[in-house]
Image (cartoon, rainbow, N blue to C red; front, top):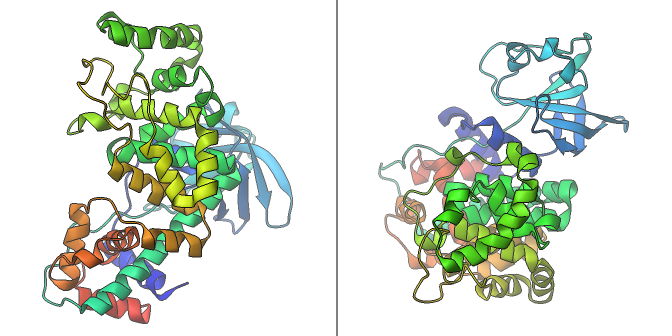
Amino acid sequence: MSNYEQARLSSRAQESVPVRMREIEIQARLFAGEFGTRWTTSAGVDVEVMHFGEWNREAGPDFRAARLRFADGTERDGDIEVDTDPRDWENHGHARNPAYAGVVLQLYVETGGPMAFARTFENREVLQARLDLEQSPPRALNRLPGTVEVSVARAMIEDAADFRLRQKLRSRAQAVSLHGADGALFFAIATGLGYKNNSIPFLLVAQRTGLRIAASPSGQARLLGLAGFLEPRTFDTADDVTRDYLKPLWDEWWTIRDQMTRLVLPASMWRFAGLRPSNHPHRRLGALGATARRFDRLRAASKKDGIEGFQDFFISLTDDYWTRHWNLSAARLDRDLALVGADRVRDLAINAFAPGLPMEAARAALEKLRGPTASGKITRACEWLIGAVDPKLIRSALHQQGLIQLYNDFGFLSPLEAWGKIRSGA
């Protein structure tokens, strides 16, 4: 464990609080591999999930027919239940419900109260393991005096960037082990296209569709339908161009809509306020569909030209309808609009492409890549470190990632205190 990671764990344990997530978000991020695949249970048993099986959307356990491997090499099929609190097993009546008889593992988040043991209605013990979710960032940067020299700031930033990158590579490796390289990349692209406001709904739609179907002729209908965006009133009020676009999608979705009802996202999951037209979820799902249909081309471009080829693919990505529209109810735009903007392309390169590379190659690529327009968090972190915004410290994608990580991990301290902890690993 690096000095940075040791200092981070020590500081965050004292200063921050657990993130609150809805169970559907926990399940989506777990299924994508973000929270790992290996745990030690409360009984001291090491267990690894080889595959999460079928994500159950009916009554019963969250994942059915998962494949688990234990430390002694034995493997077993069984169900997995995901709960916020270990006591939910009893509180939700799972112990008395035969539908949960096949559960082998309960994964839970909270540890604030007394531990509760889990048993099936047949009195068989259910293994329990805690999911270690990321903790929330500090509420505000420390404003006390104590900035550091630029050379020290650069060292701190690069330590933080290396830690952040290793975490992303580890998460990607876990996703690849569960879903394959193409599936993991598709989920990462979907999350990136959703950006911070709609990353989880986008991930859920991508997971419930899958790359194979998303790339098929029926893929766009499935993506928009599962998102809840194909509604009769949308078609009824649309102009002629939009009707022509929607008709084949409706013809496809109509045949499967009833069987997909339980998978359609509720409208409450989507966030539309404060979004630029180019970032509207309708349009971004159009971009996701266009990406899936051309995934072979994306794979070839990335293999041939690396991160540059990956970016070139998205810069040149077009769609006959979405290049001139920003949602399903707006009039046609006067001019073509890039399907994925330059900043979003760079963000996808950082968060979707680079984590699929070996560490040294990923680091070199991000060091060379100019980052997106610096966010307020990045500039505030730079000011916190050295008392000013230094363009050289916020230019590269690598340094931007490091500044974000420092802001999250040590912003409640003075820079001098943070540097002392990182240097000593305390």
